[in-house]
Image (tube, rainbow, N blue to C red; front, side):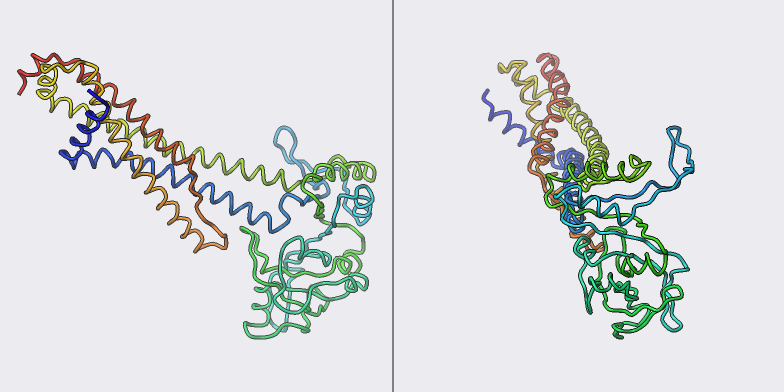
Length: 413
C-alpha cells in the first residue's frame, strides 16, 4: 500500500459521510479560527499601541516626577511621607548641563477641579489645565486647528494667554463661533484665547478637554514658586535613553536630599510593560482557544471509533485479502489526519475573516488606527497543531481497527 491509497480512502470516507464529516470538521475549524483570530487581533493591538505611543515621543521620551506624598510600603500599606520635595526649574537646567544627549525638556504643571473651571459669560466647563512651554505640541504631536500656540514672549512676560482644546472651544463658544482673541476666566483671572487645537485622543486620554497656559504664568501669577509637576525629556537618539536617565538620577541625588526617590520612566520601559501585558492576554486567550482544539480532537476520536464499529466487515475483508495491521492502522490514522487538516485549513480562512472583521469593527468605534496582523507563523502553528491533534486522537481508533480479528470481523453484520 502506498501513501496515496489511504489518502484516497480517507477522502472517499469524507465524501460518503458528509454530515458526520462536517460535524467533525466544525470543532477543529472553530478552534483554529479562534486561535488565528485572537493572535491577529493581539498583534494588531500591539501595532496600534506602538503607533500611538510613537505619536507622543515613543522610545526617545523620558518622564520624571518628584516623590509623591503617599507611598506603598513592602507590606502594601499606604503611608504618608514626613517630608516633601519638588522638581524645579533648576533641575531642568542641571539635566541639560549634565548631558549633551538631551534634545529638549518640557516642564509641566497640572491644574484641575472646580477652582480652575473655564468660564465665558454664563457658560462654564471643567478645568483641565496644562501649564507648559512652546515645545509641548512637538512632544505630544498635537496640532493647531486655528490661531497660534504659546511662544517665547508668552513665557518671558508670563502672559495671560491660553490655548484650548476643540471640545472646550465648542462647549464655551458654540460650534460656529470663533474663540480667538476672546477672554475667558480661569479662576479669578482673565486669559485671552490665542489658539484652538485639533481634536486628539490617546486611548482614554482626552486631549480635547484640555486647556494650556504658559508655565511661567502659573509659577509667577498662581503658585508663587518655581515648582513643577513633572517633566518630559526628549532624547536625541533611542540608544542614549539609558545614559540620559542615569544623568537625571545623578542630578537628583546631587540637588535633593531624597533624590533616589524621584520617579523616572523611559518610553522603552513603558512599551516593554505594555507588550508584556499584551503577551499575557494573547497567551490566556490563545490557551482557551487551544482547549477548544483539544475538544475538537476528542470529537474526531469519537467519530473515528464509530467509524471503526460501522466498518468492521470492511476491515475484515481487507485483512482477509492480505492487508497487514500496519496497513489498517495507517489507513484510519490518515483519515483522522485528513479530517483535522481540512478543519485546520478552513479554520485559517475563518481566523483571517474573524480577525479582519473584528479589527474593522474596533476601528469604527474607536480612534485607533487598528488592523489585524495575520502571522504566517501563527497560521503554520495552528494548522500544525491541528494535524498533531489528528495524529494523537486518531491513534487509538486506528489501533483498535488494526487489532480486529478478520474472522470475527467478517461474522459481524
